[in-house]
Length: 325
Ligand code: SR1
Image 1: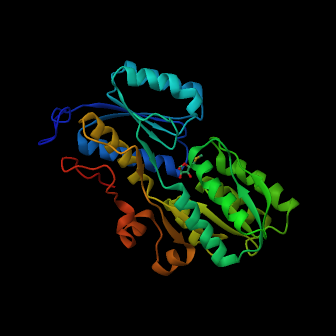
Image 2: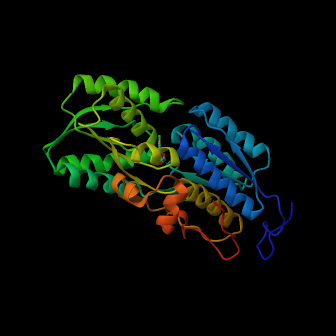
Image 3: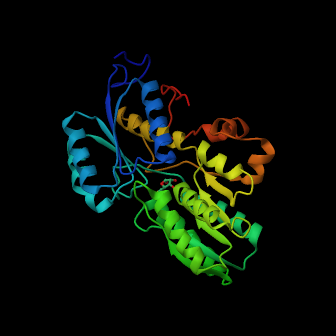
């Protein structure tokens, strides 16, 4: 493969191998994240190999070992269970392989951590919930512990409840699997049947929100419940803007940008340049009203309305070409 003119080694010669090892790859967020990573890799002349996640810690460990054996010079680890990964990640570091973590706390000063500012993301969604519903309501909350972004968002939910004692969490539920939305929908139906007084659901992952919306629509209670979420995709936008949708706001980054940032963090490390330990991509609040008023139906429409949504100045350098998405 051709090298990148004007780039430092090893990018002056093409074909640098980087592996992206995901824990979850089903769903819009992860597909867009991988597409953004691939696009940035292409712009850098990098040979990016993506290992599909199957929510399986043993398989993710195996894939890290495979990437080491295949000669990857850097590995990006996207979600996962830290306790299952630390020894194989250490093996990679010991071999001089650069490692970047997205949304998995590997707690190693040699490993830059990419995240979406999950505290801000949860604050944006919850502030909108308070603005629209006041500070006294019965809530459903979708949460699965053990995922770094969900744990960080949970800290904000706990803080909001502590500050507003009349917000009552009537039920907590959620599943992360290869069928997150439908599994969460089944749980949500049982929750709504048992708690008909729930008026607000905080579902800070778009697959959760999609599941809750499905349940709300099956039960015919869209006029009684409002859903506040995280993440955004074209399919999400269509569900948010449709007539009578209970999904009223989401706080989100562009996942393709987060994927591109993850690859840039790996590339800068390989070029011997400084990379901050914490790399943050800031989210924006997107409301149903804003989307409808602006006639936004796709991620591309949204990017045109909010140019900052498609770029991040995090971990870049003059020799790194922009990714196209
Ligand atoms: C199961 S964790 C799901 C979250 O990971 C990413 O941070 C996305 O924002 C998604 O909400």
